[in-house]
Length: 85
Image (tube, rainbow, N blue to C red; front, side, top):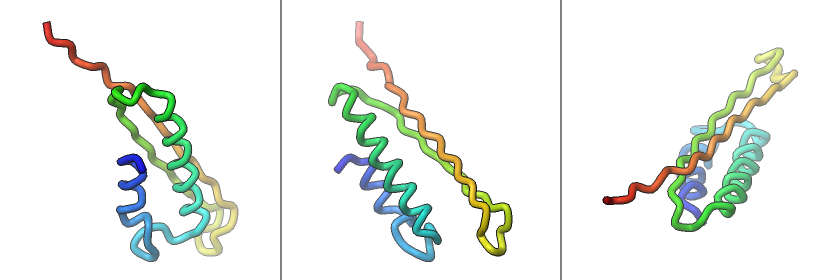
């Protein structure tokens, strides 16, 4: 398990009601975690990377939770290694 997976599982996202209140949100976190893992597998194991993810869920009607829209942004950026002269 990668460090990013440990962080996703260890935080409040893993438990109701402190974290995600909807199973659909929980499923999205699972999919993003899998996507991150797939992307990290394309990098050399010695390559350092920065991973940032954030998302938003909005509803047309917040009281009835209908008309849901979800946005997720994921950025994985290689961190250049510093070479000593």
